[in-house]
View 1 (cartoon, helix red, strand yellow):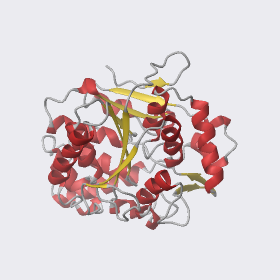
View 2: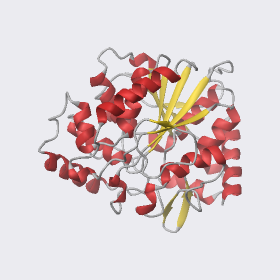
View 3: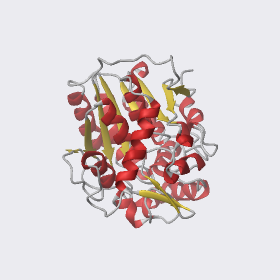
View 4: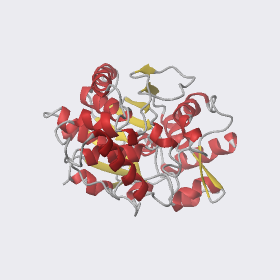
Length: 356
């Protein structure tokens, strides 16, 4: 099986692809599920999570958040950890990799140029009516994937979707996969009980039980998913070049949708790249979920934040944030272009010093 995490970035093990032509796309979306207190740390308060996706891509493009006075942060026990967008920005700038944004349903629209896949945010999945038009989102994503792949030889797809691990759990559960206590989270204490309760409420409200939608992934998204999932699944399915899903356990739900929507999909052309913080997360298991779905490669990159002087970045070592905005995949893309992990870490600290 390929889907056993491989650490990426050890000296002497990298196939440096300096002549490659990668493209990084960040898909942003919102789900009202993120407004449930205690379900996500992807924002200083539940209400501010509506701003997080827009602020993340504004930070990468403009060097600062424009829709908020400060960059998105996860606050745990009084210490604020910066959004992983600072890692993504550092890695992509060092490697000179183009960055694009696609809106799959962000509650707050960013002040950047973006591809408009879907305008409407997802609803609270407790309603059992989470996403209004998943089939249209998938089709538009597929068109975008086909178009973008004409201009690069490797497509990296990240996401910024607060509460995305809960909606991923929803889709996985609806499709019959065992994701209970296996999805990751942005806080040291992973609120598994709350996530399961919310998913169970949503399925019940829609009149379904776990596994009822095993062959109907878009219905699973409609009931207990979020708009990012069908968008990224469509982009990956439409791509004519290799795809790396830059993210954590949310991307396993994307893979589950792809598996049912494209029976001929070539899993040799897809991988997941995440951070070491997801790989070592004792409260989740990306390998366990992946083995149930398909045989794709999983990579993890370690930015070695134990060497940081920045307290917020060091907080990643304690289970805060872990992943997001494609941080793991952006680092992997930079490493493939010959950029070193030390360079990425130093550049990330420099950005934090400029922003805070």
